[in-house]
Length: 328
Image (cartoon, helix red, strand yellow):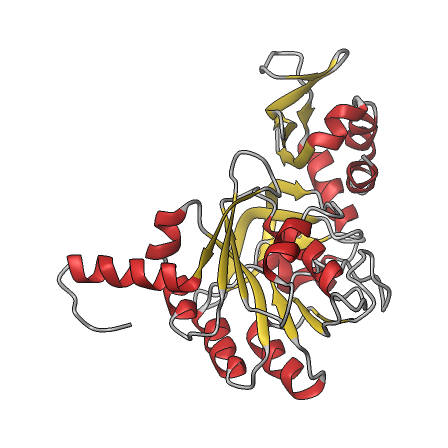
């Protein structure tokens, strides 16, 4: 509830007041606030989706009395999220997001302004924002820690569909492993390119990531991975939403030094795990020990844990069935 109120407080005053008046149970279960110009405010959470009526609060179905986000309110919310300094956030805005105080993230879209090479240099006339509420759920990663990290550090891929809690689980797993205890004595370097994991405010952590943790804040992941290896001698490097070829290449270089990785990727089920090229490339480094699949039905819940050999064998079986005989 506190995280919901924190995210809502950064929006235009009329929207802030509407959100603050919602029932506590709705606040606790909400993970997205969507604002669209001249369209109703929408909420998404454990309850599915819903709207806000002028007098009666949250409702599941759209009606004419649902509260509309005006263009002025959307613009003011955008300015407030940026601290009235859009220029300072221009780089991330061009990538489609703004990181808010507290670790919340606003997805931003509008009209792109491109240079002569077709590269986006700014966005004007913002038409939609999706505020994703950062959540700390301490203990949600305990089943993973107990199942996988009982001895030497291991490398782990956390997979799951959108809104399955991958970032939340990764954050809590880092907190556990970097706790400085005899059971979990690991040095962990966190690559926090989008400022969601640690929620740094200056040099102060906004989220609890344990006492034996170092944060590489806002660095590009591909650059930060190798920097962490050179400078912080980590046992484990943690990073969120791995996908690009540059990031995977950096990980491939780093695993040769003996460092372990915990990272997240998008995959809705076992079939997507064994068919995603990025996951196949990671598995083929022979450095990842386990793949943890989160449930798409209940956030931050483990659905299955697979041994990497099981994933590798299934990828090879499918390649053979498709007529490819090259070994992995």
